[in-house]
Image (tube, rainbow, N blue to C red; front, side, top):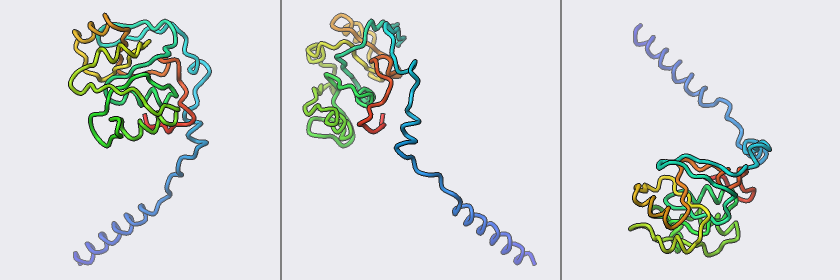
Length: 186
């Protein structure tokens, strides 16, 4: 009797599991639904300058929309590219699959999609290349997750206008709408 009851309970559980696996699957995202999810209000879309942003070493006031953007450390360039802006200099990738110019493949594709075939890539794996960065004459440096020490930060301040934040906001570079020609990977 117990054996029959156990067999019946196990059969019922297996049937329930099988039926749950056959449930309705959520529809795949369409271009229209993605466009709706990335739509921003007019207020959000217009970045008003000056902007004051707080960061690990204080705060930075950005007086006007930066035109020449440098990104340091991992992933910062992807966010800027996804917003449709081409950085004038970026850090080399230091992990994963890379192109010949030491960019992740998706980053190289994003530069190409925005018309930049030969991006300026810093070889900063063993330290910051202050001269190469300064030669870009950046309006702003975006260096989230860079691991800057306060000493390095102060050196950058002497050379350039530096901006360190924990999370990049599109308003910082005057863009809040994603580029319509690039995938949203950032």
